[in-house]
Image (tube, rainbow, N blue to C red; front, side, top):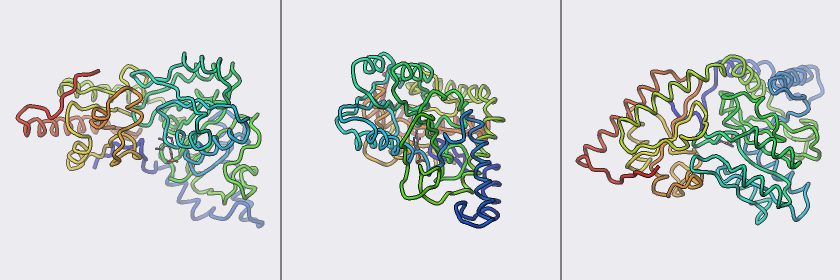
Length: 387
Ligand code: PMP
């Protein structure tokens, strides 16, 4: 099988696997226990934190290790609710992950102000600026890179706007980390990520807090993580995450241009061979690994099944929306109808995906297209010419 669903989750990178396995065998003790073997694991944990903080160019006490981005996003909204007055609002982009959207609604209800995106999925900085001038806002949630389309946010501009208005920025960087330089997100007050999206283990992640943030708790009931996240520390997974993250930043990020070129050839080819195929977010800057393809006909589940039989694992958009009746809220925010959103398939690669795999996937998509058009005698079930 050729796996093209890395935005949902990625297999362990070799360096993560090595570190995870050796720590599971040799550093499994609870770092908070009162004997020497635990003190050793505690010391190792702090070495891992230093390495991680070094890559992010931040202080070690800005890093809290947790279970992943869902926990991180929930905790930030809980903090914002506890540390703001009853009239403050939060601004949330319409294309955020459900862990942001649902937390915002749960903690702020009617006090969520939705930030629109354009037809390419890019947030409106003009609207953000106006909201910042007119409303009392305690938090802004804008993700760095979208999980369904790969569309990137104008992070420098957002950082400047939040900074000048003295409003905190929650940046869900789950899809950005390990693919683009983390340093570019330094302006975020809360930076959230999950290891399994970049080749680390599942169930481990981090949040980087700006030093001025006080009273933050991700989980109460323990003194771990400087009292900000109770619960037994998962050192083996943490060290695996820190090692792979630092490896990617040092070695893989520089290959970005070649990966953009491979994806471009893939997209150009399909746009030529399949009339009416449209790339969602094509007019925006996107992650090098993601291609969101709006097919001219057929429900995406039919595409997925056929491609699976051909040996290619792709997805409908987000793992969370696969198989659900609800069309993607991300594509709806781009202006797609429910019917066109249901014709979208998402392809997402990793640094280890080869150029030949992109080409083989293009062959398979063309073969499946050939089958669909043959069966309908050349006529499409549904044809779309919208942009
Ligand atoms: N945010 C984004 C942008 C994501 O893509 C995901 C994973 N789909 C999450 C948050 C949640 O990550 P996790 O399931 O690892 O907590």
